[in-house]
Length: 615
Picture 1: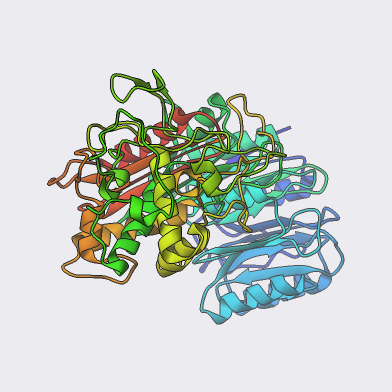
Picture 2: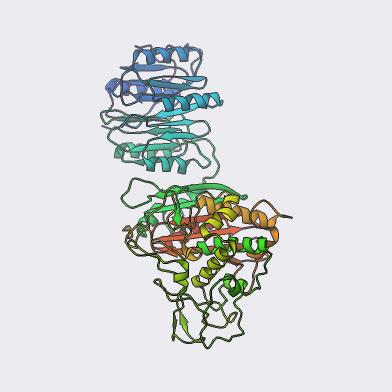
C-alpha cells in the first residue's frame, strides 16, 4: 500500500530506542511536512510519521533492510544499522552537527558514512570516495549527499554545496546530474537495488526505472511546490520520500525552458519523433558558456550517454571553421584575399570551354561560393556554363570497406565525386560549393607544408583551447555514431571524409562555443585579442564580401544591428548540426545531433532563440 501523510504535530517526540531526546524548550515548532513510503518496515513507517513534522534531513536503508532517520533539530531513530555508525551518529549530533546524509555501501557490514555541516565520519568506503569526501571538507564545502549504486565496488556519488562527483555510475544518470545543475545543485541521488536511479536538484528531478508510485509521489511533491529532500530505496523494493520545506526562490531555469519548448513538445519527445538517439547543446551568454548538456546516447542501443564533451561530425560547419584557418594563413603570409587561388594549389584547375579564360577564381570568391566551382562538378546540362541546374555542394563520404582517396585524387575525380573544375564564370553567381573548400584545403596544405588536420591543430584549435576538435579522418577521442532517418546506426558508425575542410570536422559543442566566444569578443574589441586572428581579420571573416549574405565561410544577417549574427549548419550522413553567434549580444549556441533529420536541430535552435529573445 502506498502511504502519504501531511501531519502537523507539536511538542517533542517520545524517546524510544535510539531516539535522541530533545528539550521541549529547544525543539523546533513541528510543521506540516509531507512524506510518503511503500514497502518499508512498519516501524520505519511509524517513526517517519512521528519525525517528518520536524523536518527529516536524512533517511537511509542498510543492505540488510536496517534503517535510520534524522531530523533537522537532531532527533534520530535507527534500527539494524552498524553499532559504530549508530554511536558516531549520536556523537556528531551531540556535538551540534546538523546531519545532511547517512549512507551505506551495498556490500553491507560495518560500512557507512555520515555527513553534516561540521564534518563527516565514515568507515569501509571505497578509498577514492573517502578521499573525495575529505577533499570537499578540506575545501570548506559541506557534503549534502552520498549514494552508492547496488553493484558496489568503486561506484559512488558525492554531492556537496558547490558541485558533484561520481565514479562508475550509470552514464545516463551522470548525464542528468549534469543536466540539472545549471543554476541548481544536486541535493539527492538514489539507486534502487533492482536498477534505475533518481537525481534531485532542488526543484527538478529526473528518474529512470523506479517504482511508478514513487515516481508519482515525487511528481506530486514537486507539483505542490515541495522540495524532495529525501529519497531512499530499501533492499526489498520499498521506498521512502519526504520533504522538509518548499522549494526556495531560484533563478529562472533556462535549460528547462529550452527543453520544454522544442517543436511544440520536449526535447526528448522531439528526439523520439525524429528518431535521433543523441544531441548535445551549449549556449553562450556574456561571451561565456552559460550552460551545456547532452541528451540521449552516443549510439542507439548502447549504454554510453551523449555529453557536451562528445565529438560529433560537424558536417558543413567544417567550412566555417576551416575559413578561420584560411584567414590565419592569409594573415601570417600577408596575402590578399583578392589573389587568384590557382597559383597556390600546385595543381592545374580545369575549366569548361565555355568559361572565359579571363575569369579569376579569387580566394575571396572561393570562400563565399562565388568562384565558379559548382557543387561536385555536376550540372545539367553537363557541359553548360550558365542556365543549368546544379545540386548541392556536399560529399557522400566513404563507408566501411571503401578505400579513402587522397585529396589530390578527389580533385581529379578519382573518388566517388566528379573532378573539380571551373564550371561557370568566377563571380557570376552564388553556387554553394564543397568543391571550392577542397581547393582551399589544398591551398592551406601546399602553403603550410602540413596536412589540414595538423595545421588547424597548431594554428587554430590549440590557441583557442579547442581540445576535442580535429580534421583527422578518425580522431582518437570519444565519437558519436551516426544514424539513419529510421534511427539505425549507419554502416561503420561514421563515414570518412578526405574532403576535410568541406565536411570532415569532428568537434563538440563546447569547442564550437569557445570559437563563438572568441569571434564575438574579437569582433567587439577595440584592438587585437589573444587568438589566431587579428581584429581586422575577424572583421573580414564576419563582414559581407563578394556574396552579400556571407562573410567568409559564415552566413551573416542583421549587419549593423544589435542582432547581427553569423551562422553555419551542417548535414552529413547520420549527423546534423548548427552553430550561431551574436557578437553585439555576446551570445550564441551550438547544437550537434547524431540523427539524419535537420528539423530537430532547427527546432532546438529555435527554442534557444525564443527563450533568450534572440532575433
